[in-house]
Length: 367
Image (cartoon, rainbow, N blue to C red):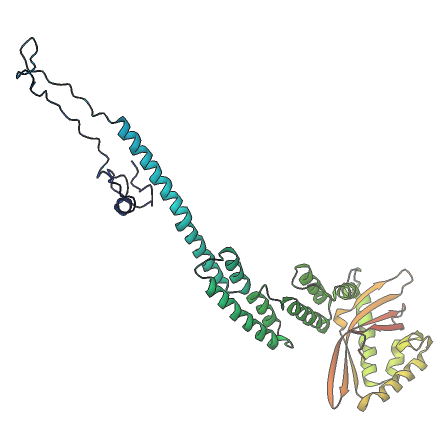
């Protein structure tokens, strides 16, 4: 026998139909007199009453007092009425539970979720689901407060370089109308970071962030192109790689020092398209380099080639096509400004002399 009340699920005594609270509620609300226990009614033993008509007892022929047989009290109609009443009470209790208790529980859970997320979207969801909810006005008030804080927060982040702060904004205000602007800012800063590192790994990381949906990827095409320029897919010959690094390093050291003889040492007899000057002998190329250095403000122009990140490919004509990450340093208004993100493209002959050189700038306006 179940010891749980069929109406509320609380513990009840075994012989009771309902728990004490539900029994009292039914008696009060529905004015129904419930029995105290489930025991069957006691079978009444009806004794034969005297026959008042003839003033004598009903005696059997054998002279003994006759007793009526033990019989249960007729209660077919009463049992049916009791069954219908019980069914009605159970249906009413279920309806009441479904309409009040269950809905109250759902609303309470919805409000708890809104408080936990503490976001504009969370409070909006609660207001849409429970337009007559007990916390509707509170949800609206907290949502408006968040919107005000959200606008103030965005104003502070407009020009920030702090990626963590921007990502925190998206997490705190996932449905914000400023989300697209924040993501554009994250995109721009992530690209600037990739250019600063200027490596195959950095460009690969940028592309992975785009694929994960962190931002739309305004620079995805450039990232892919630069990745292919710097990713070493060709099998490496260590001897050739050492020779290439020696040429690249020596050339840019001489260029930074404006060393004419040093430049000639690493140039082939004829060089193509250096500084867009066209095909010319190396003496002319070296002279043009010296003149360019002289025109630089205060005569300071430095080149930092990352020879450890050299990427190369050897053709069937024994020509080495080389890509090298490069940072240029300019002296502007007495301050040195580093401009990373250059990729220099060189072609070396079989003697590892440069006969063609040009560069990819980090952006069109770069010097």
